[in-house]
Image (cartoon, rainbow, N blue to C red):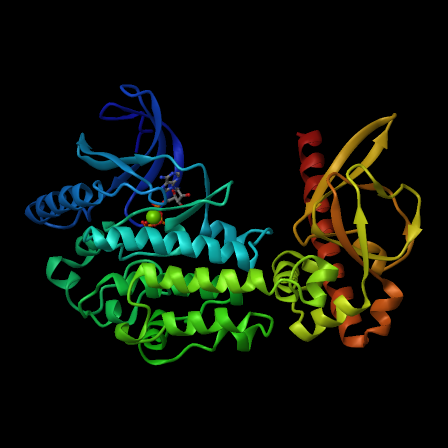
Amino acid sequence: MAELKKLGRYEIDKVLGKGGMGIVYKGHDPEIDRTVAIKTVHFDASLPEEHRETLKKRFFQEVRAVGKLLHQNIATIFDVGSYEGVNFFTMEYVEGMTVQDLMASQNRPSIESAVSFIIQASEALHYAHQQGVIHRDIKPANIMVLSDGRIKLMDFGIAKVTQESSQGPEMATQAGFIMGTPNYMSPEQITGKKVDGRSDIFSLAVILYEFVAGKKPFFDENMSSTLFKIVNEDPLEPIKIRGAIPRGLNEIIVKALKKKPEERYQSGQEFAAALRNFQARADAGAVDPFTREFGQSEAAITQLLFNNCYAFENFTDEEFSEIFKICEKHNFKAGEVIYKENTIRSGLYVVISGKVEIFQEIDGKKVVLSAVENGQCFGEMTVIKQFPSTTFAASVTNSFIISVGEKALKRAGTGIYFKVFRNIAVGLLNKVIKCDQRVGEFIRKASS
Ligand SMILES: Nc1ncnc2c1ncn2[C@@H]1O[C@H](COP(=O)(O)OP(=O)(O)OP(=O)(O)O)[C@@H](O)[C@H]1O
Ligand SMILES: [Mg+2]
């Protein structure tokens, strides 16, 4: 297909992503002079013309209904149209990252941030439900997070029409229509029962579970067993996967994932209120000895390291506890040097709060190699072997850092020592592989 330059009055800038139904573009509305996101929606070409016309009408109707939603946490719909046979709608362009990408990134959010995202989503859903609009496709790809921590929900109600497109209108109201990923669907959606706002809340709770436990509650290699689990099996409580998850939060998630809608939170507002209550209690209890020493609760720091520090991959909560016992704590001021080039030391550093830069001085000039923050580690290669440092490390902001020496790790037990050693060796291997690839590319370029 020739590259699309325009859709109606909208100028197309670039592709933002592809979904099941079409493509999302970044574009420009010259009339209002604003950036927009444009989503094209394609109906199955093999469907009879007449059926496609009905779908198109339904699509316009649905977008019209969703277009009434005006909320700070919902990507606003601006326009709907059809241009040279392509159906599309335009919406607010959201500068951010989808929750799906965030979950897959190196920088997974803390429990506190995850809870804040879910509260915002839950309140936005409550607003939509009150306007009579059910989302029906709450999943990580349909939630975007902005750099300031606000979230926006996207693709309200569209699932209803798109599902009809692939299965025929009669199937959409019956059991068994599934498109894309089923992991976030509610039991009533799968069994084809009547769906109301409580179904969206269930899907949202699946996302919260995945955030805090690091695993999906209902997952199997094949789709039919995943669906079976959603309808019939209680998921493992998040606290059984990660003992450091606060009990209050565990209970909220368990309730929100009940099979029967009447046993769950009854509205987005109710779910959000329970989470806000949990937040307030967590804040009030924030002065236990651990928090006094480390600045955050043990659960929060465990989660931070679990999400972001590869050296502790596959660590249990007990092993994390052990690390907190043996580590040294450091407060560095903005600009303070942590270690210099050529220093011989042994052990790894982890940034709990603040930001550190790793740099070299080349011909008197500072060349920054990387920035380390939010639970990430640095200096870890010295766990494998002591060698004079080839870089400087300095704190950019005021920072709180823990360090674990190689000897302390050994004393903590062979299990812990071996795990850290192995993780770092794998990290090193990955670096070597990347280096090899780059050298290969370089040689290829040089010889061509
Ligand atoms: N309003 C928007 N602003 C900025 N980027 C967007 C916007 N809407 C979508 N995107 C980007 O486009 C990508 C594709 O979105 P799309 O909704 O087509 O895919 P999906 O949600 O994975 O699938 P589907 O909704 O078809 O089930 C998203 O992952 C996101 O990165
Ligand atoms: Mg989407």
